[in-house]
Amino acid sequence: MIKVAIFGYGNIGRAAEAAVRKASDMEFAGVFHHTEADQLIAAKPDVALLCTPTREVKDWAPVFLKKGISTVDSFDIHGDIYDLITDLKLDAELGESVAIISAGWDPGSDSIIRTLMTSLVPEGEGYTNFGPGRSMGHTVAAKAIPGVKDALSMTLPAGKGKHNRHVYIELEDGYDFEAVKAAILKDDYFAHDYTEVEQVPSVAALNTTNHGVHIERNGLSGTTPDQQIDFTMRINNPALTGQFMTSCARAAYRMQLRREWGSFTTIELRPIDLLPLEREQAIRQMV
Amino acid sequence: MIKVAIFGYGNIGRAAEAAVRKASDMEFAGVFHHTEADQLIAAKPDVALLCTPTREVKDWAPVFLKKGISTVDSFDIHGDIYDLITDLKLDAELGESVAIISAGWDPGSDSIIRTLMTSLVPEGEGYTNFGPGRSMGHTVAAKAIPGVKDALSMTLPAGKGKHNRHVYIELEDGYDFEAVKAAILKDDYFAHDYTEVEQVPSVAALNTTNHGVHIERNGLSGTTPDQQIDFTMRINNPALTGQFMTSCARAAYRMQLRREWGSFTTIELRPIDLLPLEREQAIRQMV
Image (tube, rainbow over all chains, first blue to last red):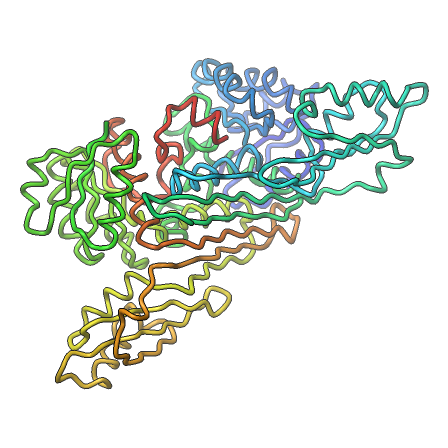
C-alpha cells in the first residue's frame, strides 16, 4: 500500500482526498494544513500531495522532499516550470525522493497529449483551447489582489489557442473598482490575454467547477498531409486535478522505489506507472 | 544522429522511410528486404524498424536484437502482445538492445491514450471505436487466405467499441467463393466480429488508406461523476504507423544508451523520449 498525505485543503485537496480514498493500492495518511508540516513528516507518508496555492509549491516541496517524502503538485505557471524543476532537483536527490511537478490537467495530463500528438504529427499546427470554464489558478490570483472580496475567473476559447478571460469580482468595502481592476489586469496571470473585469453583487451565484479543453493538431506524418488529431474533455476541474495528482503519486512512489530520484514533469513518467495494475495486467488491458 | 534502417518495404516501410528522412536527428541507413538481414546487420544501424507482416515480427526481431540493434515493430494482434514481450526480452538483454513492441497507432499511440484516460477516470466505461477505414492487419490476413487474389478489409464502428467488418475480395481462378469466404470467417482476425465477405471485380477501385478512431471514456474522478474524455483521429493509416514507429525508434535509442535493455510496450516509454528535443526545450514547449 502507498501511504499518501494531503497538504493543503481547498477544492483540490478535497478532491484529492476522495481519489486517494478510492484507490485500491493506497492508504490515506490524512489531511495536513499549513501549520502542520511537522505532523505530516511525523506521519511518514510515501507521498505528499501539495494542494497549496501554486506559488507556495516551491517553498513547501523542499520541506518534504529532503525528508524522503516524495511530492506531487499542480504548479500551473507554464513559464516557470523549468525553473521549479531545477529548484527541486537537489532537494529530491538529497532526500532520495521524487518530485512530480505540474501534475494537474494543464500543465499535466494535457502535456502528455501534446507530446504524443507532436510525435504523431511532427510538422503542422497545434492548439490548446480552454473553456468555457472557471480557471482555478486565475481565480486564486484574482482573489489575492487587495480589495477583492470574492472572484471568479472564466476562461473563454477564442480560437487557435487564444483565450479571453472574464473576471467577476465582489469588492471589499472601501476599495475603488477601477484601481482593483487595474491591479488585476497588471497581474502576470492576466497580462497576456484579453481580459474583462466585471463587478457583481454575488460571485457565489455564478460559480462553477466545470471546465473543458480541446487540444488539436493537424499536419504531416512523414510527408503525408491532413493528419487530424483532436482531444477534448468536459470535466469538473478540481476533481480531475485531484485524481491526476493521485495517479501521479503512484508513479512517484514507483520511481522512488526504483531509485529514480529527482524532479520530473508528467511527460517524463512512464504512463504505465499511473495505473494500479501489475505490468502484465496493464499491458493486457491497455495496450 | 540516430542511424535507422528499415526492414520490409510495403505500405508501412515506405511511410517509415519518409518519416526517418524528415527527422532532424536521424540518419537513414537504408531499406532492407527479407533476404537482406545480413546486409542490415553489416550496416550497423542503431535501430531497425520492422515493417514486415505482423506474424513475422517474432522471427525477425531476435536476429537484430541479439546483434545489439534495437527494434521497433507494429505487431497488432492484441492478445499475443504479452507473449511477444516475453519472447523478445532475453534476446534484447543478451544483445544489450531494446525492443519496442506494438508501436503503431493501435496498439501503440492509442494504448497511451487509454492508459492516460484510465488514470484520469479510473472508474467508468471506455471504448475504442475504429473506422470507417481500411484495416491493414485484416487486409493482409485476408490476402493470405488461399484463393484470394486481392482483398480489402474495412472496419466499421458499430458503437460501444463493437465493430463490423466488410471484406472485399477478388478470387484467384479456380477457387470457390463460398469456400474462401468460410476460410476468411474462420481466421482469428475475423472470428470475433460480425464480418461480411463480398466478391468484387476490382479491389483496387475501392482501396483507401484513410482510417480513424474515437476513444471515449466517461465516469468518476474520485467521487465526481460525468467526467467525459474523447480522443479522435482521421488519418492516413500507414503514414501514421510509419511516423509513430520512427518516433519510437528515438525512444529505443535513448533507452539503449541508458542501458534500459529489454522489451517494452509504448505505455512503458517516457513520452518525452518520442521527440527530437533536449529536455529543457521539450518541457518548455510541451508541458
